[in-house]
Image (cartoon, rainbow, N blue to C red):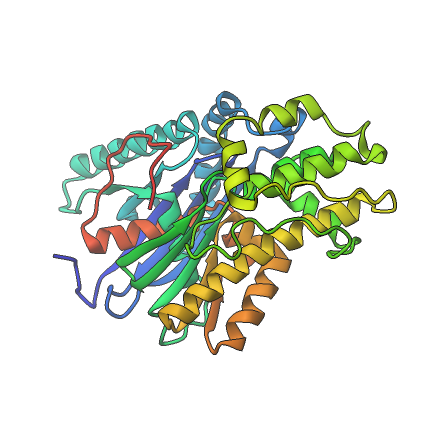
Length: 402
């Protein structure tokens, strides 16, 4: 049975280390599952690893783990600094934390272990102090959380909350996942579809590499695309008319590769052997089944890097929006939700909101900083798991799904 007491109020410390962002947040959570929880953010800190991984063109798991281990004690001291304690004396002290929520997956397992180990050691130290104090305070509970559920629950983070969300269609888009859910309520959902190959965020990153853009590729591609024309090149929209709710982005990525290879203007910029190697095997089979032989796009020497970026971005977003809105119409949902790192893409946010309004659906997306990896959503997911009495094993699980 889930905890439904209306008076439930907890101070939750969230810890996120699934990839290349070390994040920690302290929130005050209240409310029940039936009334929808409310979250007050007391303090949050993030340490970026972009400079560390940029020379390698992507995230190196062992380096990510090292940086998490270095950053976590620093963020902890910032969260519970004397200044923070003076601002809110009772809530900003470590001894007043009720729950610790830490990401256990999905993600890079070495990185996940850094967060889990830190959380376990912190819990042990706090509870040892509680035992020594002998004042009857309840011990701190440690809850492993699902990173994807954290993204899903991010719609609860905005300050202004409507009274009705459900049923809803939720699109979770990131570097590792592209998932479409039918959400009946806060604890019940059904997966409608997911990518059969590359996640859309991965496709953004790889196309950015083809164009010679720096890491992280997705945001750089969006920035460059603002100067280009989305209709300059007609890239394919894989599976856009398929009856399923599944996605496929490897074919679109390969179409960009072929376009660049056939356009001499870009020959010097593209590492053809490396990128083509990624396109062999299962990805090629998906490509052929998803879009047939229509991979080649006629080279236009007048097309700029910005045009290629904008045309790719439009093709990918067209697929995401088309499938999401079709699901919302067919299942007659009240709202459409967008979350995940790629939800920070302004073009996607605007396009999905526009189409959702056309069919009379509400549209929900967290503010930009709560779409990328953050500890606030992990703390929120931990509180909801506490209410649900749901526990994930405190073991790093890189393949954990929703």
